[in-house]
Length: 424
View 1 (cartoon, rainbow, N blue to C red):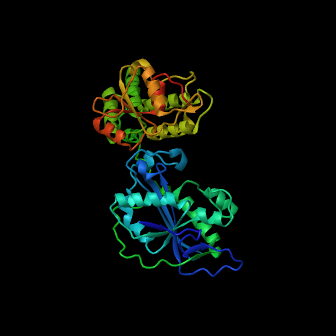
View 2 (tube, rainbow, N blue to C red):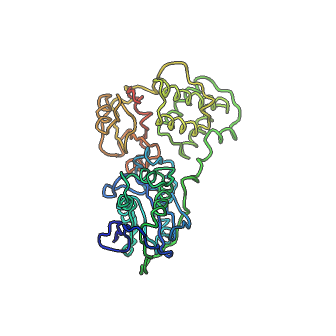
View 3 (spheres, rainbow, N blue to C red):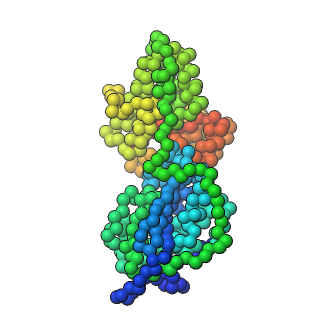
């Protein structure tokens, strides 16, 4: 489906690195598009998907424009620590096929330029195949091969940019990397020949059914439950027992670090039932956040994973971390292993916490759960008690099924303290 135009002069003269002292004049009519895909993993063969796409278009040695969007992959996000995207960022993003019109328009009549182009090729091919769109052979230029041909040492995009004097920012974002590829392309322009792409007929067309969602314009989270509560709850005197009951409910709602519309309705109804005032409900929210802060600070180090977790909880509660003083007590847990003993548990997605300096593998997680008295299950069924995931907004098949069944979903950071495991 794809024909690669290498900078190695292998089987075509369309793209070839110049080895003469006086390079030929580049064609001013040659149109190109620098592209980058951020993905859930390394190869679509293992069901990995695109989570972000960016195109920077140009003609000759001039940049024309750029286009980018987040993409909902309908699966677990994968290496969020690399591309900085998590389920909550993508759950409302458009699907790949919903933006086909824009992408097909950008690709038409242009040489596609990418760094380590084979990686981007296979993902583009897989996504187009999934959308049942067939294109004529596409011309590709790999800047990794091009820069190595021209004397670059190493292969990483950032390293090549540094050696060729190209400014590169926002690494591992689709637009940042596409801009870097475009910069390399322009910097090497006088040392390559790039002929205009001839007619690519028949060329399919499509109409976008969704709006592009750039990383910088992710939709803000909806108003938190607390803000809704403050607008409507009358001030009714409550008591300590009622607050404790509400805290327990709040802990259950937030253990998967998501607050659904249904949970919002149920929390509001429970606050009404318990007779809590706005001030008392906010006190419960602040106490909960304070306890999470205390857990994160107990070992003297707040990791990036813990910072993300704290920010997520604070946002859902409508509170500021700056105003929270954690309880003076040492590390506590939100439960104990006995409370989960005998329950069935299943894990989904890549885990992120570490134990004794090593990342917890799926096998180690299952071993720890078994040691705590839980029964590990390989899949989600209606009888499953708990699903554990690193990403609270995971779109894995297991997570979707668990939510359909109403299965209890726990994040890693909530699960390990419940079974008495001290993780980092």
